[in-house]
View 1 (cartoon, rainbow, N blue to C red):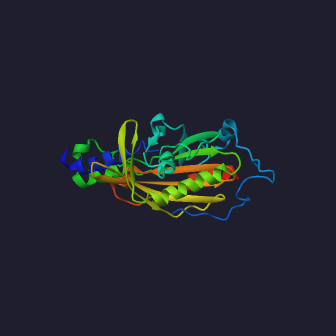
View 2: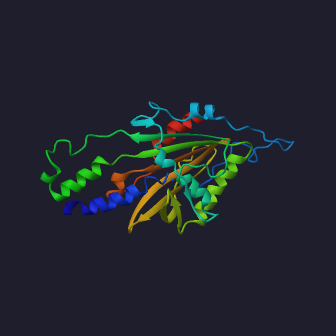
Length: 260
């Protein structure tokens, strides 16, 4: 249908970045010594194990207004890049740890669907051009937020977060990479205002580009002691309507509460 071509183009660009699993970098005052080591130079803290992280990551029922479940396999395919300085950010964008980690746990939080504006329509062909585009946008206007927890020994979490912060600054002009054999282009990276939870955090907006269409993704990495919580949010409806959105605050709040 001609009337849906623009919608489909924007949707195609947005969908092309769905597999890119994801922050204004800002450091809050650290609640620990910063180096995470004792007087003997050995790690003062030990990384949590996988079972412990799985007990701490959000579960269904923890986030009001969201369904929480496993992360689809396609979301976790590594995004690789030849740019060493951008690599920590590329890894975060595909739900990989910015630096090697002892344990990891993941979940996906999907905002519950409101009534679809097309539910009462007998046929999309019966809808006027403007109503069709509006219906598609509204039906997809919900946040999908992926959450990853990474645990480190000693000061590993702090160093990993610093690597992400450095990458956000160094890669402001964008970079390219590959994911599942497909070229991925990041047009630009912009610092965003973090939620300021945990000991320190870094937040950003990443603008992806595909076939001339650009789409934003939003993410944040927060340090809670020796554990990093990484979030990235996409909202297809907001992308297609070119409406601003951000990392789901309710998801960050719920996950932060479990890490206190």
